[in-house]
Length: 149
Image 1 (tube, rainbow, N blue to C red):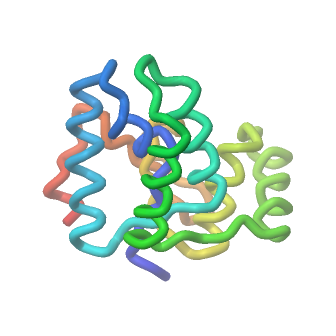
Image 2 (image 1 turned 45 degrees about the horizontal axis):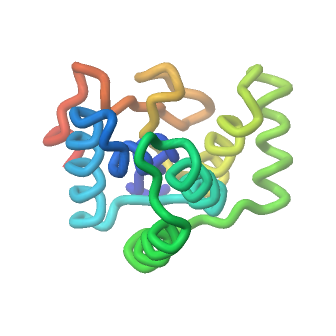
């Protein structure tokens, strides 16, 4: 089992979202610590969602060229897990058995299959666990960054 923490798209996006300054500051601090301690993990799905969101959905979007550069940097600094056929199949099981949305199920499936014990996201019920994968919302008032490093 890995000590890495899988970071969901929303955490990455908040680091670039000037419309949410408090969450932006929290996301940057978390991401910096994950890189410093070499504990962060991403997936190809997360990188794709990041590109679409920061170029199309932010009030002050990044240009495609800037988003491309950010992804280049993420690929160098972070462990990136591929979305495989087995991940898709496991995600379908997560939808079938646990009624997860497909995209959330794919995040869970990646964490489960690659034995990543923690998913950092605001999209899941914070503190919940599913087949050995724990979901933690770093924007929850009870979250203490120092407790994770």
